[in-house]
Structures are given as structure tokens and as C-alpha cells.
Image (cartoon, rainbow over all chains, first blue to last red; front, side, top):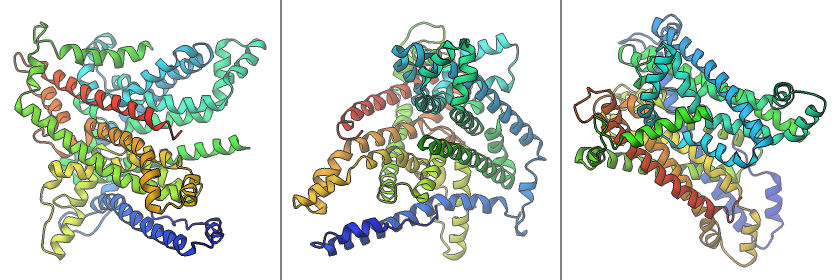
Length: 287
Length: 267
């Protein structure tokens, strides 16, 4: 947030100078705008940065009057509850993204090629989870999960991925939709079909490689969302990463602060990766 | 499709149908009538104004930040950095967010301890764990969300419109009053509704901050969901969830109406 502020480029100044009738007005307006921009940026920058810095400060606070220490950060991998929660959350993230992609990639390609007429319905259904609060899903999923646990014969934490797939659906839909719009699916698939490829080959060997960055995008979003999920896990009494962090908050404040900040940094790195993927695609699109 | 059916439509139907059933699966209106009970109506009212205030705060500051971005270089690294940061922060909620604010203005927070040491006052007390605190904490993800939602609308404003106002002799005030504000009002209100729905359905942040009691609707559902089931009141949680669906549905319908209107000028 503390990056340099773009000053109005020379183009703007030139435009201002080319209107000699009201040079004072232009200059004043530009100065006012600059003051407004700096004030807004400083105030909001502080609002967003201070809580993060405080979390960091809290995580390295010594007990009592002890000096500052990174000891809590070192304990993240060695704490048993935290470690198993991290592993469970990572497994859930992988499961969720694999299932969501396996479900959505063929559906969306198929809808685009053959079933244009129902594309609005698919869009509506996929974006629906954005509007239904997660807490409502928790209440409604109880009977569904009773069946899942009965049929699967287990109530392992990994069954949570079934609900998570629904949570990530809107994000996967949007990422894949952008990817699909950027390529000419119809021409690609017709070319492949006329060369004798099966529908399976069309999807796996032709269309998906052409939208690889969109698929990667969707997968990264899934991981970020699942690693941050709290509502469903906590109400079904499963200990995923966020629930573990919250429980730690009651017993070991420094460790929980360190863990929560590192979870955030992890999500940040993921989404940063994602924006690089997006930028590379942009450049290729322009070339 | 089938998958969506099982894990999205069925839960919703379960909530809607069970809201009208009693413990022995007989149809009843008792659960829904319970929504009118004073303690439940109070939680919905609390939810309403916490969401409304945090949506207004988020919308105003988010719109300001979006304006700052829109008047800057559209391809600059600064804008890129801020929009990516907003993408992260808008998703940022739950335990991490609650902890960040506990570390800042909680009883042992950085700012609290600094103020006590240097000014001898504790202005926050336990307000972080009350509804006032929720509004502050919710703003943290509402402002970035507003930037993401409102920036496209601001980008849709053409510089030519301003030039046209000026060549017709209009002042800056005229431009804002008769051109920019009327065009931006529908997308602004739409974004406001979206922010409201977002705050209204937020659960994790509040759950991590407020561990005792249930002053807002999502937390009331938690109480109903986790507490011992009382005879004849099994479906109160579902009635509450049904109430939340109703509120969110109304907000979303209003939003889509506004969207139709704003698409007249902005694409």
C-alpha cells in the first residue's frame, strides 16, 4: 500500500497547458485532487496495515517482560494439533480443487459447445453459493451429511470437501469462464474432431491445454478458499487449520497469532502467483 | 448439475421446508412465528444495522479509494498493486481478521497498550467484542470489496462527458451534480446492497470475536445449532436460516433491478 503514488503524467500537464483560457482552474483542480489522493491513501493505508503489523508484533511478544522472540514462529511445525490441522486442510484443498475442476471443466466446455441454451441456468446455479450464506448451508446440509457418513461409512474430516466444492463453485466458474471466452472452443474442437479425436481427447488434449492458466487460476483460488474456511468445519466440530488457530487463541496467544499470520501470508503468496499467471496470459493475448 | 442439486439445492430446500415443520414433521407456523419473538427480532435488528453501517462505511471509503485509483494511471503498477491487495483483503475474514484486531485494539493490543502507557487512557475497553467493534472489523473487508465492485463503474465514466460539460460552460460542481452523480448512483446503491448482503451473511469473523452470547443472527443460528435440542424447538435454527435467506434474497433482487438501470449508461 505504501508504493509510490503515480503523479499525473506529462500528457495531463500538456492537456492542461493547451487550454490557456483557464490555466489556474486546471492547476488548482489538479492540486486539490493530489491532496485528496494522498490523504485517502495515507488514512486507508494505515487502517489496513496497522492490524497486520500488530498481529506480527503480538506474535513476537515475549511472555511477561521477556524480550521479543521468534520462538512462537518456530513452534508452528512442531505443535501436534496445528500440524495435523495443516495437513488435513492441505488434503482438503487438493481434494476440493481436483473434484471441482473434474466436475466443472467438462460441464462448461460441453455447455459452450452443445448446450448454449442452458448456459444462463448454469451460470445462475454456479453463482448461487455467493448469495447463500455459509451458515445457512451448515443448517441445511445436516441431513445430507447424515447420508454421506452413512454411505461412506466414515465421518472423517475429509468428507468436508463435498461441501467445499459448492463453496468454490462461483470462483471456479468465473476463472474457467474467462479462460474459455479467450479461446475459440468451437473451432478447436471441430478441428480436432475432424482429425479423428474422441470427445475425451478433445477435452484433455486440445481444449484444456489451451486454457491451462485458467485451470491453474481456478485451482489456486480453491486452495486459498479451503485454507481459509472456518464456518462449516467449526460447526460440524472438525478441526481444520482455521479452527485449530482459533482454539490455540485460547491457550497460546503468540503461537496462534504467528500461525494466523502465516496462513494469511500463504494465501497472499497464492493470490500473488495467481496475478502473475493472469498477467502472463494478458501479454500473450496482446501479442 | 446433479452435484449442485445435492449439495446446494437440497440444503436450501431442507431449510425452507423444515422451517415450517415441528419436531414430529407436522406442518406448523410456530417456528416462523418464533422469528417475531423479541429476542430473535432483536438479533435480526442488530444484524441489520451492523451490516447497514459497515456497508455504508465500506461504500464511502471504498468509493473514495476507487476514485483515487480511477483518476490515476490506469496501467500503473500502483493501481495493479492496490487492486490485487483489495482482492486478497476482500476475502480476508474469519479468525485471522478477528485476531488482527484483537492484537491492535483488544485489551492487550498494540494501540491499546501504547495509549495506556503514553496517554493513560483506555478508549476501547471491551468495545471490540461488542457490536460497535464488529462494524469496525467488518469495514476491513467491506472497503476492499467496494473498490473491486465500484472501480469498473468509475472506469466507465468517459472524460468526454466532463469536457462536454466544460464546453457548455459548466463548473466542476455542475459536472458532479448533473452528470457524474446521477450516472454513478445506481451502481453505487447496487454495490451498497452487495456489501450489506456480504456483512449480513458473514459468520466466521463474528464467531471468532464473540464467543459468548449471540447478538447477531448468524450467531443465533450457532446457538440453535450447537445447543441441546429442546422439545418442539428443533427447527428454530432452520427458521432463523430461512429468515436470513429471505433477507439476502430481497437484497439480491433489488440489486439486480438496480443493475438493469445502471447498464443504461455504463457498460
